[in-house]
Image (cartoon, rainbow, N blue to C red; front, top):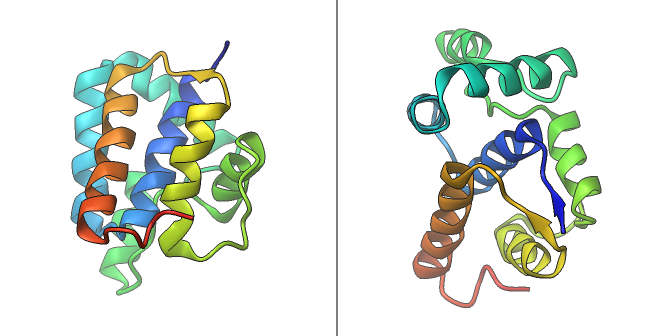
Length: 139
């Protein structure tokens, strides 16, 4: 099994959050949750790598965009495409089905999580999406 890098796992959490319809408060909460549960140093290292590669915009920019009246996800378009490419997901699928495709792909990809808090968040989000919209998030 191939392990996800820390930065890929953190990016995946923000990818999933996008498809859950995150508000700025949701983004802040996930940022704090992951920082606490992963450990500040390890989380900050992953976030720095993602920022440097242009795969996320960072908390400061999310907050700035909110002040300007333009809510913004943490993951950039490049970040979203990175996850689609890494997991061989179709980027043109209907958004409400994306988490279903992700769930199926994670089960068959043989990629292994090393950050339990990210794995728990992803699994919890997929489960909640399925409960909120039964049969609509499955491809």
